[in-house]
View 1 (spheres, helix red, strand yellow):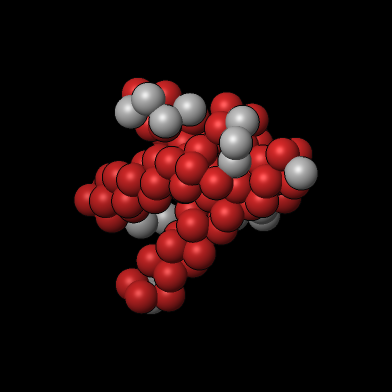
View 2 (view 1 turned 30 degrees about the vertical axis):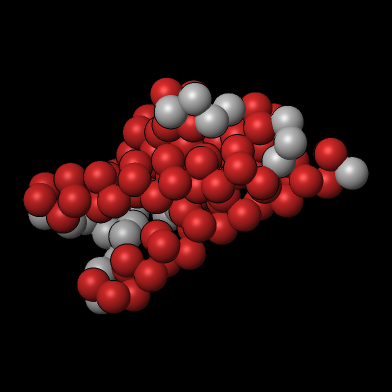
Length: 118
């Protein structure tokens, strides 16, 4: 049962990150895989870091073995970004995938630890 809660926590944490990312693209009407102005890239990276950290916190609260859920959520985020990076057409800008790998995945892992939740 603890393993299922860790998996559920990781999935819930990832969904918080993913759904808010899709919502940002839909609400702004921008393609997050296209070239964007620097101010939008910075705003999006900050937004993603916040929601990745929130997803990590939620994962850590759901699972009894909080560390495993947070690691699982971080791995899902990094794997999704890496898969998107590898499979995206050469013409696409890759700033969103790189910011997910370099900023958002570490945020999902570090925020629960810094706040003492994992």
